[in-house]
Length: 450
Image 1 (cartoon, rainbow, N blue to C red):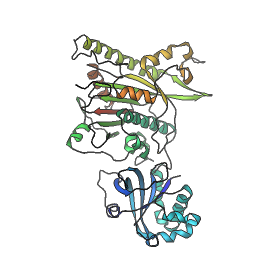
Image 2 (image 1 turned 45 degrees about the vertical axis):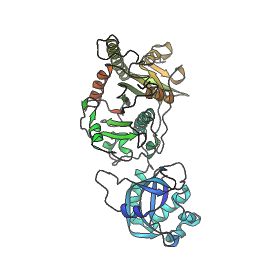
Image 3 (image 1 turned 180 degrees about the vertical axis):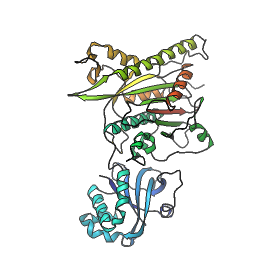
């Protein structure tokens, strides 16, 4: 069931909402300062009926319908309100005309913000009855606002992509709130849309602030960008004054129903550090959860081992002074880039910024677990059961170590891995890659600043 809200428009909203939005705002997304009021929780996208905001309830009229998301408080008396998909009513609908159809819920017509589920359902039903010409518009809004979240293999894939973006934002030190505002990208009924990156469903298509950002999102460190259809970009800051910027790049060129997993890559330009995480699904088997290692998983593991071995060679050359700047004193707890996250198969949750619980393992640790006698399946094959993993990193520990530069490449191995990332982001790369590029002049935590 979709959440329903009443929004009493401000003067600026009355002026700007009916205007034709810029072409680059795919759904007409606009943010307004709105009088602060505690909306019913949780904060979710709502199907909103906009009124003219008349001070006298008896003269108030509904002038349009669209989607809204309540942002955080932006001042003592205001909050940010994200609005999109606005459709103006050709003939405004007086609020008092709804009282009879609303029954006992009519008292909520004087409310502001998200209505109770019963009142919202009654309001939606009443407007459908009084204005049947709006039914198609309302159907489209319900679909886009999460009444029908992606399920099955597509839902699983979206969950992993959302988790990867959330981990990048957590590592970067930014709020994960934008994940709550995700909506199905346009064309959700088209099978081709299932290969659209997760970030395409986040608000604000491109937050372009200046020509430097335009330059940055068209290029990756040390390489030229490649244009492709199924790619997405978002740019985040910790705050408006912060010098830290996170460029999130999400490439997905394969139908989400056929992708085997997600690669998450975190790049810290200042520390010249890269860490890569391969997501592995655990399936429920009886009372527990199990990861089954197949030939595809073995090929991926061998590729990770090759990358790690090459990074060790590069690291050793740097330490000996034969391969560029020395890495002496630049300690890493794990100096190779490849890691694995074992995660339960999780349905996609709309309006949620929660990370998927999982177990982060260094590639060597993952490989050791597969070589233990307990990994032998009853009918052959290799497996890792959830309860058989003695030690692992959880989301909090992993993001903390990654943020402070204790995990990932160093020295000249950076150049080698950046070259591999470029290959991954090319048209011949894997189905789904989520990259976070942390760009700042400030070093990661736990470092002495000269």
